[in-house]
Image (cartoon, rainbow over all chains, first blue to last red; front, top):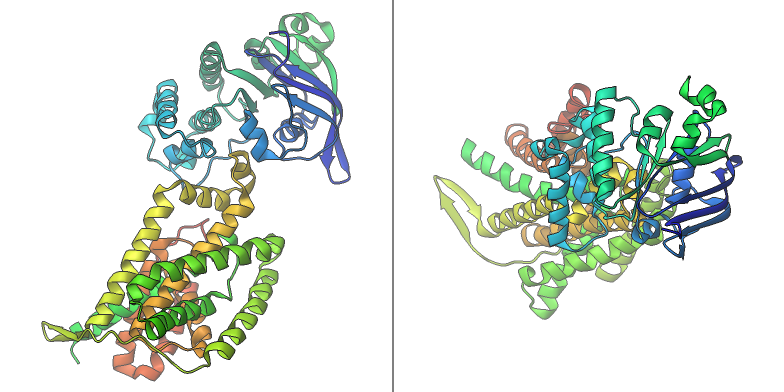
Length: 238
Length: 286
């Protein structure tokens, strides 16, 4: 538990001439749920996209599980054990729920265990089993998020990164998904959550990083941050 | 000639058209590339089959898998080395690129093979049933064309690569997050398109005389089949192919064979007006 699973130092990135991240220092410990919160446009999604290699970093270093994965590209990042559940789910239209889940295991070749993991997902989200042969994009928003999370888990990641778990979902559904994440975490899955809904994120995560205009403004345990008057005022509306 | 004969002629022709067009359709649908090389790939497949048979006495059924695999390799390399560099550019760029490559391949083939029409003659005789007469080699070609088209459908629906192709088509960025190497899948898709073209060429060489002058006609047929049936799906190519075969056969009977091509294009224009997605195409897949 001492050595972090993911360790990011001085990370900067952006799109073309537009720099979004300036200097990000962040770490995720093995077995925990950590979260990144912040307002719209602060750079949360860009941070995840930079970690997973969709966006090229311009400075800084990303260490994962003892390896330097800076700039190795999305394929290698996934192979090293980081799965990214993208904002807006991004399920594949024209493919069934089952096929979408199987695409999560695209890099794996252990047929038997892939089937076991599929059963595990269906166990976790029984509704997905019912809808297994349905086009994934015909599911409701909450079911799509379940499918997207399942697809992420299908790669057997050491770290599961989820971008905007609650976006566009009813509170009851968010609770249901949060319960599932707690269950997944209890089974040993490390999770890094990006969330605009700070209240929901703090309930789930043990530690949080607050990101403001591309920099980590503050970080700490969610318990401590919840008591911080500045955080209360800016994000929790207390 | 009675109606049964016309319909059977149309279906036989249609099955060949489906096989001819399905690779073109796949490449267009997935890569958004109008592959001008497709006609030359068909002729190349036909020539290779012919020369394997003529010079070495290899039966087309034996050479077909090898011809198809060779075409896959050529297609993979063409996409990987050339088309991938400009695949995200507007469609006119890739069209121009494949058009240029087609000129090269077309002229190489004409120089090496000359433009003399050639065909494999298997002499399988003819079959008569219910007053319908059909050369056995055509029936054989039809069965082969349908089998290959069916095989492609199965691979696209059930295999890991098939899933990856659809994923890349629908959402490149999300596909990248699955660990899919997009350029590799693009090259495979283009390779499969060339493979189906090569196989179609091998089948055509058993049924019709084949020559380099036909490349333009083959592309024209593939184009019409895609528009009538719906772009980028195997069922679309199958329905479009069978429809075009029947249209040509029926209109050839009533208006004379010289007009069947025109009627085919007129039907295409009509479909474009009333159902731009094609007969079995779905919105969002075009």
